[in-house]
Length: 152
Image (cartoon, rainbow, N blue to C red; front, side, top):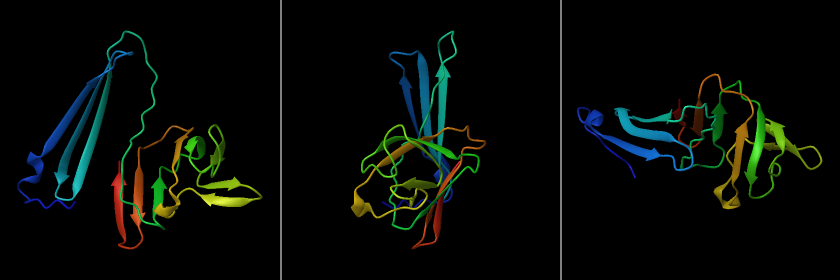
């Protein structure tokens, strides 16, 4: 789907979603809006409603139309990867760790986690970084169109 907006109208489009915790007392707010004609902004706010500190981890689950050969760029501070799920078992199983972006498997074979593989492989890889990000940053480079999608 391609959205075309008049320059004067893009700031009038906004969607806000609220949610409250059931087992833990918190309030979650997600706001989606256009910051400019070609910039979609996603803002998240989590408010702890309890009198105690609550540790949490957040991961953005987004769906992108990817293409084989694309390149992922992340915060350079992030290096140690903890595998949460791997459908194929590559580059490892749940609980395994490796140094991003090159995961070794088998007999010294390298799995390049920052390169997009073919969708025909029907594979899923979910992982977390062990280090704290110095700046929340992620980009996806599309090789065929030379376009970049950035998340900050």
